[in-house]
Image (cartoon, rainbow, N blue to C red; front, side, top):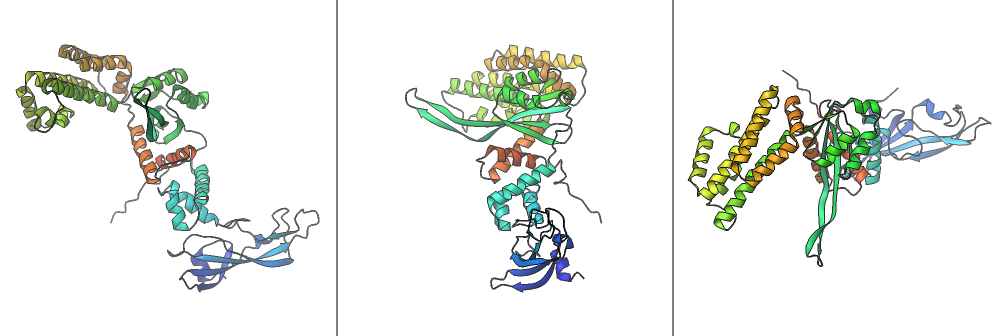
Length: 442
């Protein structure tokens, strides 16, 4: 009959025969084997009836009732009486405590789940459970092998984006008299934008060859399913996609188009301020005080803020106010084009707003706006694809935030393989249901 203490411990295959509390307050639980299958020889399966000796082991287990608990398992060594068996003796073992294991199976599973599903670091998990870093990392690898898919699911829209691994390091070259990059490592991530599978994988190195190699490592059937690929305005990624996925349509992410337009307005503001004032803008200069408002979309800015801004720019010296106002109007024409995203616009409306932007950029006469128009012209087809399909790389940007947060929690990574493994575990938690909560209604 199973006693109540055995039920509380919940370790299958053993029963509690005694409990003591050590001087430091740690409970010590004495165990005996309760599973008759432990008497079967692991080599031949023979059921032994002759005991050889008694041994005691101390396997590590999870905390019981919130307290670290020491286990002492009193078990037997048996003779194998099968003449053809290569083993002479064997010691009892159960699935929860495999042979030669110092940790219970459920403790290893808890270690892997703490890091892979609950967002804890390896060091923190090892400290809480009283085990070493390599033991926890080994449990994480076993956990990842069980929860991550062995084959990537079908993907219709693929997102490609890069994230820096750590900080770049520089060295000053005294001969050339300038700083040189010593180390600047990047990881390129591949994300399922529509299916919810999260981060599919990463490769080290921001090169067309590495991106192409990752895509071509999948079979032809998987690649043929990809209809769209979302990227930023990076020729490296575009070249790789055109090589590995010639049938897929490229889409430029909405965020990067807006970011490029705002950057052009800021460059105009800085340049004209330096030319007119002989220095950078600072407090007291109205164009500097309006720097954040200039990068906001006019459609999302209240009239009580928008009208005074235009009046303040008109009141500035013409060499400062007029170029900034012209650049801002040009930027807003581009924002009108990008506002068509998710509205299923007709084709002629897209081209009408695109021509309005080109004309506005030409009328300003500003080199920054002409460079912006040239970039938009270069990526015109990809931008139109993004507008008509509504595909963006927002999921990739969100995963990059999770990747950076995970790296900060770990205080950086030394091993790139470990980083990619833990990154994928962190970015697939939602897809695996680890972040879903159940709301109970009264």
